[in-house]
Image (cartoon, rainbow, N blue to C red; front, top):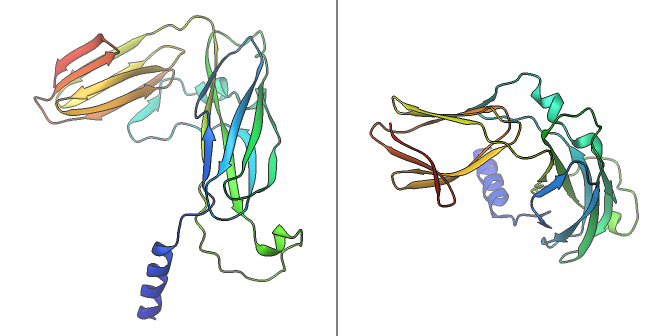
Length: 231
């Protein structure tokens, strides 16, 4: 049994990654009051023919370092019902083949207040079997597939009104706390001594980051310094 487990791990780790997609663009921001149709180019970069399901979905924020300041914000900001995708399924995408997927963004209802709304365009690939390539339904019974299936999520944002920033940044006792009270996301570059990373904080969200004491912190938007402190 021990040798079988070792063999299984070696085979699993040595297999090429399958069902890979190259998608462009990787992020879309639209005016909530100006419906448009956005085109996505979807390319199969694997060595197998695949089937791709596409649909708009909402994904709640899941992070050990962030929490929403408004408990009901997820139902408020959900944009998925105002998105239409065509086609919803690419039945076969051959290796290196490209297809165009169109996303129609609808006008948000007038009672939606100014702010940012979000959803994701979900791309779910499935490797086609030889029989499915020929249009034959797969036989019943068990099958042992070791293909990696990697779903892709493209963020879609709709904004209404002029973007307003309302960010509160606090530094104390080795902790950096950023509170975004605005109805729009906040983005900036964080520098902590030699470490640098991009910050994206969703609307009405608090983010906490821990660093060693005496760490010098800078938060910049381009050339503009937003905040500077020493923890």
